[in-house]
Every structure is written in structure tokens, then in C-alpha cells.
Amino acid sequence: MDHIKSVSLKPALLRSIAAVVIMYILYALTALGYMGDNPVGQGSSYDRPLIVPAGYAFSIWSIIYLGITAFPIYQWFNRQEGHPLWKKVHTWFAINVVANGLWLVFASYDWLWLSLIVISLMLVTLYQINELMILLHESDVIINYWLERVVMSVYFGWITLATALNVSAALSFYQWDGWGISEEIWAMTILPVAALIAGLVFKKYRDAAYACVVVWAFVALVIRHMENQQILTVISGTVAAIFIGLIAFRSKKVLA
Image 1 (spheres, one colour):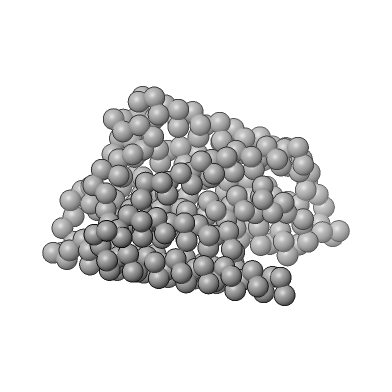
Image 2: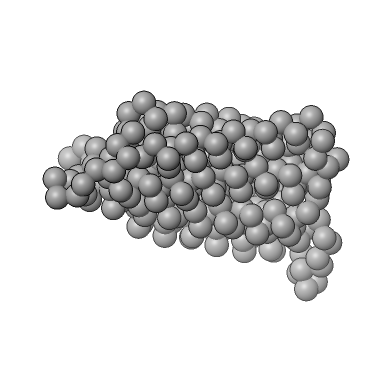
């Protein structure tokens, strides 16, 4: 980092903090019923597509919201100057959290195609942030593991899977007939595809926190389907077991 001049990060940090405030304002407006008929964007749960996990899985949002609130605050007190790549991180971060708030609004109005576009934007921004985190690491920038790295990994992992969920929810909400193919068959197709995408991301980043989110989601699918959808239970359980193995293998290599 010696050959790269540190820059002031204050303007970028202020943008990120302002974006988080906007997100919470939109969150509050939806929660209080001022934005559509479905507070806090619950429209996607109406038809309960088969790839939607047990309800408790969505409690991960409390961790994500805590993380994306802590991220710019931590940096304000610890990184008012730093590597210029942090400015790009904050640009993508600000776009992401405003999009997060807009997702809540669109879902509350049942504008699920718009919410799908927005969550796709969120996925792109998180990909960009994770790429920048790698570049920062390669530039010998010391990154706080919990408040900077894990925050983005968990968020990225959940949005990766939530994008697939949003596609299924939108198709179900708009009563797409699936070309006559049953919902069970579509679920048996979508779940392995989502797992494959997550696996490719894990292969690229070797990120245990990201993989833990995949395990969390697929175990929740097992719990939802274990009494009435044996095939989906087996698929979900197998995916969870594979990612547990990947986490264990990764941890063993790190400790070796």
C-alpha cells in the first residue's frame, strides 16, 4: 500500500451513511403501511412457492441490517482516510442499500417484476463489492473480518439465493403456468441450479461465511418440506451437506 496514496474517504462515507438512512426511512414507511398493502414487503410470501424456506430463515435479515448499519459507522471511526478503492466500495454500497429500501416498497405494492429488477441490481452491487474487497486484500489493506468482510459475505450469500426465490415468487404471483410443468418439477430444477451458482461463487471466493448462508437456507428448506415433499427434502439436505463439507474442507486448509 506504500506506493498508493491514501485519500479522504469522508465524502464516500457520508454517502453510505445517508443511503442507510434512506433505506431505514423506506423500511419504516412500508412497516407502518404507508407503502402498499403488504408491510415490509411480504408480498412474495403470498403463494409460498416451494423454493421458499421455512419462515425462520428470513430472520437472517436482522443480521444483515445490523451489518450494513455497522459497516459505514465502523469505517467512519476507523477509515476516514485510506486506499482509493474504498471509495468505489462505498459507491456500490450506497446504490445497494437504497435499492434494498426500494425493494421493500415495490414488494409492498406487489410490483414483483420491479422488485426482481431491483434485487438483481443488489446482486450485481454485492458482486462488485466482493471483487473490490479481494483487490483491497491483494493490496495488503487490513480488512476487519467481522465488520467489513463477513458483513458483505453474508449479505451476498443471502441475496444470491433470494434472487432465485424472487424469480419463483414473481412467476407464482403472476400465475405463470410453467408451460404445463408442475411446480414440484420446477422446484427440483431451480434448487440445484441455485446451489450450483452458489457453489461456483464459493469456488471463486473460498468464503466460509457465504457458504454458511447457503447451509442456513437449505436446512430451512429441509425443515419446511420434510413432512410432505420427500424429494425436495433430499435435494435440500444434500445441498446443505455438501456445503457443510466445503466449509469443513476450507477451514481445515486455513488451519493447516
